[in-house]
Image (cartoon, rainbow, N blue to C red; front, side, top):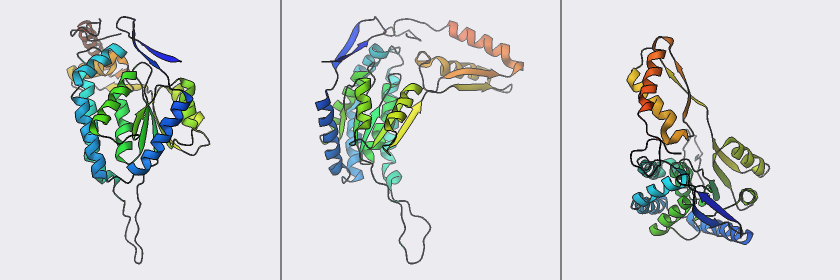
Amino acid sequence: MPTIQTISPVDGRVYVERETATANEIEKVLSAAAAAQKTWKNTPVSERMALCSKAVDAFVARKAEIAEEISWQMGRPISQAPGEVAGFEERARHMISIAESALADIKPEAKDGFTRYIKRVPVGVVFVVAPWNFPYLTSVNAIMPALLAGNSVVLKHSAQTPLCAERLKQAFDAAGMPEGVFQYMHLSHSDTEAVIRSPLVNFVAFTGSVPGGEMVERVAAGRFIGVGLELGGKDPAYVRKDANLQQAIETVTDGALFNSGQSCCGIERVYVDRSVYQEFVDGVVTLVKGYKLGRPDDGDTNIGP
């Protein structure tokens, strides 16, 4: 059986090894997702909200274990890892709280003799392809609204962070999510393409590299399905001469170096007004000299691999 291996950047050992799904398993998962969605879409929004809320509760209850796994899989300092669990909870609970209003019918201006409305309906099976750099914050952005809107979800997580898919499945199972509504698969690149081509998949939500996004766009072309592509950016910061300089130094540096710089919106260049340029540079140098590069399982480490 083909396998994926997660080589931990902490010590170079194989931290996780999993078999990839077979063609038969892929077909079973997608068929189950399509069948389950027919019932799930008719489940009242309030019930979907309650199940998703229970899943968040189950997920957060294991935050210490989950934070440690994040560090070992992708190298984030353990001191920063719990923040992603908190961010996951914050985003998920916000999306749950607005679900009823966000999914309500839109009523255009009234017209005599007509009842006019725009009804939001689920698309079907949503295939979520998630990256390793913020494995929970990125995936929740697609998973939670898809489920709340009445879609079933199949998650393919990065080969660097496969445990994240498994932990999410465990949380939804603990919440009592109906079978087939939320599933995951460990997939090769070629099998990921095959899933996107499947007529059972109705939407693809991808977060990752520009080449990865190009693959999704190419493979989905001609299928007339929606694709959501959140790709890498080249994000600038601008420091004006009247800025609070100390605040600018701290926030810009954190924006560039947090998560070892491995962020979709990490600051990659800075434009500084000439009048405060040297003071800004000197401040950044002083601040970064206080950072500690080291093993991410050391609580004093600021920057991991």
